[in-house]
Image (cartoon, rainbow, N blue to C red):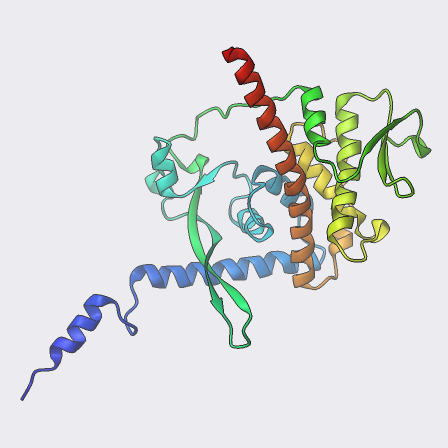
Length: 296
């Protein structure tokens, strides 16, 4: 009689269906925990108990993170300033502290796409373990502060603006800038300092970007998204944000469905990211131009 035991032994060794590695089990557990934390965070916001200003501060520090990943960071390590996996930190010449290895921050990273039964395309997400710099041997490193000349920053802000900029002597209610729908232009009041110009113009740019990307955009109902996106831009580029009052944002989101809240947080993030991307390109072009001039 033939011995068929080798069939099962080879299947186990090759990882065929029916066997699950410790990594797979950990992946599933982390992924399930991540989705549960996201739902819990959105539920808190819907119930009026969430910390939306705190969420925005984290989003400003991790501007490339999705809204859901920012909610995950807020749930697990809200004081985080710089996150990376173990490989990333090794490449930086530092290591995750032994005592912190069991305390990763779980985020979700896009995996491969798949086709659903109805023909639509879905996206798999993998759970990724990352650590804040405070959890590494580099925790005492001083992070370099990058400052940009105010004039250069304003030029970058209006670079490739979706609406032309007009300078005027006065605006209603002492406003610093306003989008004039009749003229299709952002009007900016003369005589302001760089910080006030940035705050005023960034807000109107966010309104315009949202209007272009959102069907049925209403400034009165959806304007808080532009306000929050402007806040994110100011935080990113070192503009004073003490004049921003975020106390009412929580009330705007309270009572909404979880999916709707997630979508609106994503709108805020994507609006700020689109303007920031234009600014980054303009600042990089300026840097390259200066480098060429210095090399002559």
